[in-house]
Length: 234
Image (cartoon, rainbow, N blue to C red; front, side, top):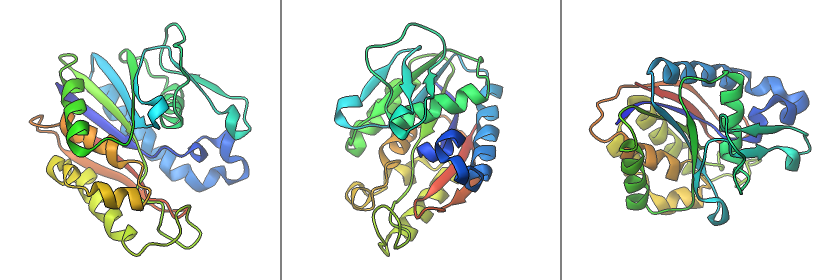
């Protein structure tokens, strides 16, 4: 059963070594992520699963001990999901950022695994979430994902007038633990707006069905034309 969840953005720029001179720009987001992780630890989970967007080649489960790297971003920095033997695949970027957050929090409250979520349809996401929630008596999720990437002219996806409305709806749902609203996010619109968090958020929606969790939105901004949100459910 799901007992808690933290929702965090997944840009590599969240890692100060990657952001370099721009590291301070996401300082408030990092602080909010730390606060959300504290909620996870306080829930005393038996298992923590880091859920994040992935391409088709990197979708699926990752065992405890799986490693990730930021070397592709010009930084000699490696991370790991908890303790354990290294798995056969490197973590996708979203899970690597999650592993970095956990390392900074000195996570030791429960074993850690990962799930890379490819571009699944809504019902597939909900089913994956239900399966995660059934893994143990007390399951927590760290959900890594960004909103639209079309909030400004300089955004990765250029400006799309629909982006602000999409992000506002996502922020309301994440801040109120509204599983129905997350499940109702439009898959096609999310793709057009390059909202990588849509599938991980819908996995969360499936996992939280019937759990009766309350939500708090800890951070909301779009500093690079991309919607970033931090929320805590407990």
